[in-house]
Amino acid sequence: MVAVRMAAAVLVTWAALIALLLAPSPLPEHWRHYVYSPASVGLWLLAMLVAPVVVCVVKWPWIKSGGG
Image: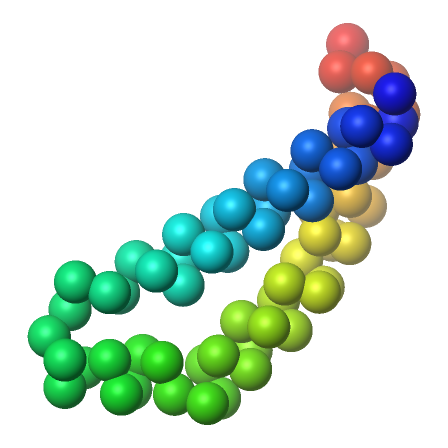
């Protein structure tokens, strides 16, 4: 059951990060160059790797206890 809760935490974190990546899409075209710069996309990719680990560490009591 711990693995299922960890997988859920990782998937929810990734879903939130993907939503944040797609959020500026309705902005005008000339703004997208700044929002989707190589540096910001690189930081987003780094967050895709680091954020799930942080979430699992912070939410470890919830993951371990079974949500009770």
